[in-house]
Image 1 (cartoon, rainbow, N blue to C red):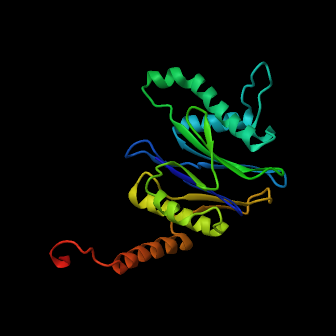
Image 2: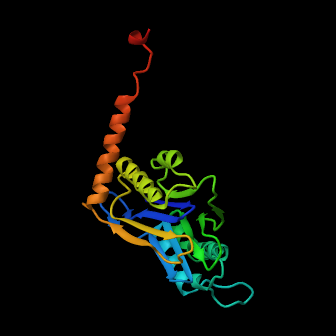
Image 3: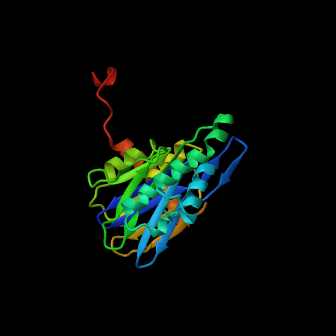
Length: 249
């Protein structure tokens, strides 16, 4: 299992992904799930993955080396796409192509062909955009009304995002809330864990402002976890006792 979240606010884009891959209780590994495709000053693109590891790696390789074109067109790479929409379409096409190639083997082994991606960034002067791309290759786009998207084990981290993130939220406040969301998920699901990869890009910069891996024991993330736990305990104590039962009658 994994957890990835993308937050698209007025000032820019935040992407966060854990690195834990679980293929059984005794086979837990670390793999990078947040990938960057950047040419400073021209484009900045971030791709976070969840689902079957072999499929996601095949999709990533195909996006780098070239996805077969239609009607005899030459293979296309993600770096050749002129817009984020075209690039999102190419990710979807790569997913469908990998499914075609690997379907027989997956079915024979009774394995599920499930993957999903968060894909965000900016190319040239077009607006910064964020997409969620499904296993079938179709996708949806993030909006101002709901300025975040999640893949993987998303249910534990969603409540804090719903309450605390708006389109007008400061870029680094969005990063902070995203990390709280990640911590909440890690607390409730052992399939999500450190290290955590984070990337931040500001609108118009066409480059990453932050590209960082949070390792176990990092002081800021440890402090954030402790402060959030303390704040929850304080909020619980501050809420009046429910006026039900014998003591409230």
